[in-house]
Length: 361
Image 1: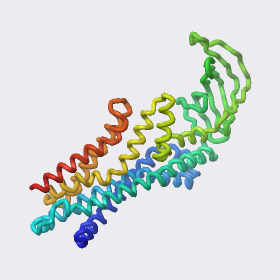
Image 2 (image 1 turned 30 degrees about the vertical axis):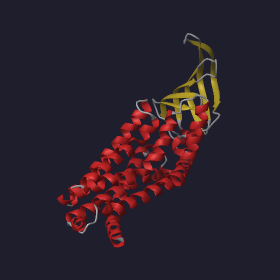
Image 3 (image 1 turned 180 degrees about the vertical axis):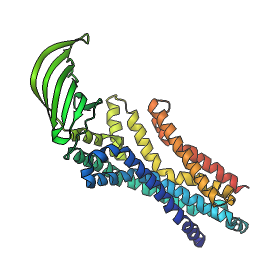
Image 4 (image 1 turned 90 degrees about the vertical axis):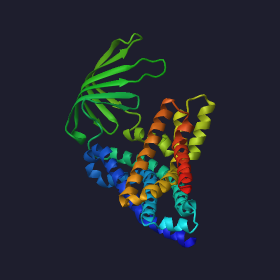
């Protein structure tokens, strides 16, 4: 039967890589779209921007691998069914599950590869992308300040009404700065007619300082002609704080955080949810093949287009189950572990049922 196994695997190779690269291209386009503002603002740093986009690709590999496996399976089985090759094998006494065995082995191998890739490459790329974004923002050029928008730096919330010029010649007008109070303190509101920002230093001119009392009413503290605000941390440090997010942690680190925070009584739902998804998502390739293989055998005789249609339909349903489960997990509608594993449970049960059906047709 090794000849049969090799034959089926060869049928999967071309559609696997085709599906993988098509989905990767689509997802990379999404990266460019989501970061178009930084690309426009920092076009002079195009090498760093390209490197940043490159570092975003590993997280999409985990999405593209199941897509490639899915289309590899659906198109290969559809072709074999269309040409009645599986019918001949069944007439020779070969069970459907035995025909599908090499498909499931490929799914298992891809899933194991996804686990290793997630732990070694994706985590590293997440941290490196944050460091790269830090270098981009600190490079010469227009800082991330926009008119008529609030943005937060350290314990300060900034609002700038007018921005004139670019880079070191940039002039800000009508600035408002809200400072978050320390424990048991009161918020401070600072206004200035003009300001100049360079590196981490804001030079404010012609302004006033107000302090909010216990009733929330502003009380005048004083006026100033010039005030220097030296931020304790740079913009990059705030970006770097994302390194502590679940995306930049391995499974072991996530489990340790859940355990440590759980002992202190803190809410660990978000971490538990991310941990569950990191355990479940790499299994997508194998789980999807369980469902796609019998569906492709059942409807594959409709032509090559049916293989593509089956793949798209199953992939659409699978990722929507994931999105719906994540929403329920975040809102408390489902236990975090159940939410993370729901797609695996649902599609594994569906695959087993479909396999039983085609075996007894």
